[in-house]
Image (tube, rainbow, N blue to C red; front, side, top):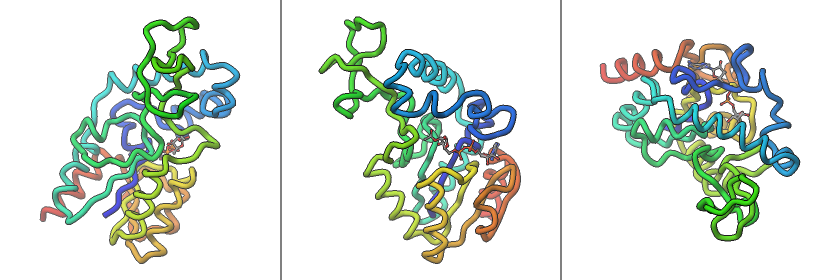
Length: 228
Ligand code: OAD
């Protein structure tokens, strides 16, 4: 089984999604102002303020029944690969292992010059997070628009999608590529595609089974059904 999760699975923990009409982050902020390398180069202070706010939010919340159900599901099927577009680390906090972080992790820092994970310098001149090794600005270890998916995550997710019997897309609008292409690839390779979402999405016309409802309720029901 290959599972792809999106912002919807963390919604019930209190993490805002991106594209929900009233509450989504992209309803309130413009992605090109906050989630591109150009925006960071223009105004790193503003970008850091936004990410620090999101980090605080993520640190305050807890994994929900949906995250926990996926930990259980991994024990019920012969092999489960969990790919997440979320940067909140909630799958790992629930106990999922081997999670493929397709868009990175908001709680880690990366050096904007060296590209590698880095510690913060204790001697920042600008007041912004700076690399302890080279002194250049740190950035959150997330994928911004226009940037490549981390190579290892890309390869592992591609292989899992192309090799699975069942592909489960949970809480994603399925509009951001290449993540959205994983379900299409699984379908082309003969997998059954199941979607769990509160709304129809761009993926819905392609799926074999659509389970409509909040992930925190549907996933525990699915588990119960699988256990018979
Ligand atoms: P979106 O915000 O685009 O979509 C969230 C999906 O979750 C929508 O289809 C909702 O209907 C659904 N949803 C909301 N609450 C739910 C619940 N309780 N249970 C199940 N489904 C629910 O988020 P993503 O598809 O994850 O990328 O967005 C993909 C990427 O776009 C993100 O990773 C981020 C964003 O820009 C980057 O930052 C690179």
